[in-house]
Image (tube, rainbow, N blue to C red):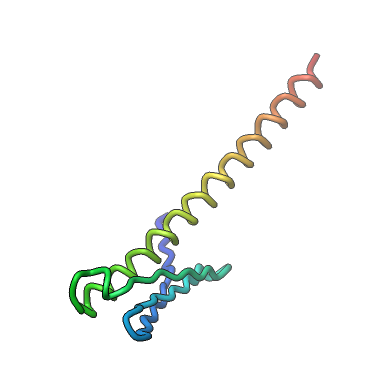
Amino acid sequence: MRQTAIWPVAVRVVHNGEETKAELVLDTGQWFMDYSGSARQGSLGARVPEAADALAVGEALIELGSQLIGMAESEMAARQAKYAEQTARAGADQV
């Protein structure tokens, strides 16, 4: 059976002088994660607000993605270790 989950990400872009900050909130339905990224318009060589927005949001999305991958890898490693322990214990009980 096919299942679909929707994980909405709310993005807020805040301008403060030459600094642009992006704030993200991910809602998985079970937990929330929040991240932020920033960019300075001066570092772009010219004042290009749209580019600063894109850089700030992109930075926050990269951080969010890295954290999600890290969480998934940790969860998989923990489950593999638990399975290996149960298998070893079951094998010892048969001896």
